[in-house]
Image 1 (cartoon, helix red, strand yellow):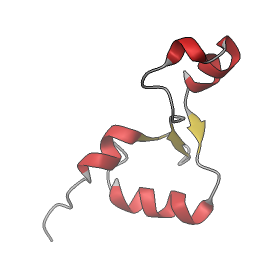
Image 2 (cartoon, rainbow, N blue to C red; image 1 turned 180 degrees about the vertical axis):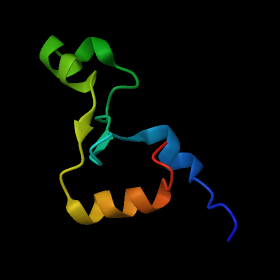
Image 3 (cartoon, rainbow, N blue to C red; image 1 turned 90 degrees about the vertical axis):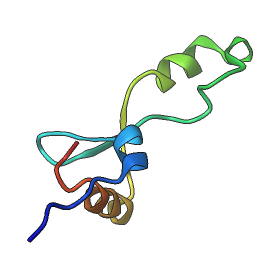
Image 4 (cartoon, rainbow, N blue to C red; image 1 turned 90 degrees about the horizontal axis):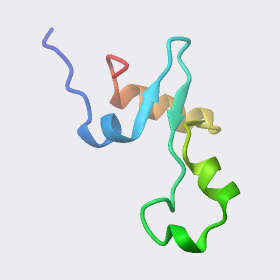
Length: 67
C-alpha cells in the first residue's frame, strides 16, 4: 500500500493535537487590524478547537499523519 498524501491546504490551516483534537485559527485576522479592538485581536491570536465533529473527521482524513 503506498503512502497517503497530506492535503496541502489543510496542512497550512489545521493542527491535530496528541489527543486527537483538531485545532483551527479564527478568520478575519489578515488586515484592517486597527479597526478591531484588542479583545478581538487577542481571541484571534490562538488556536481554537473545531466544534463540528463531522468537520473534524473530514479534516483528520485530509491529514493522515497528523501534521
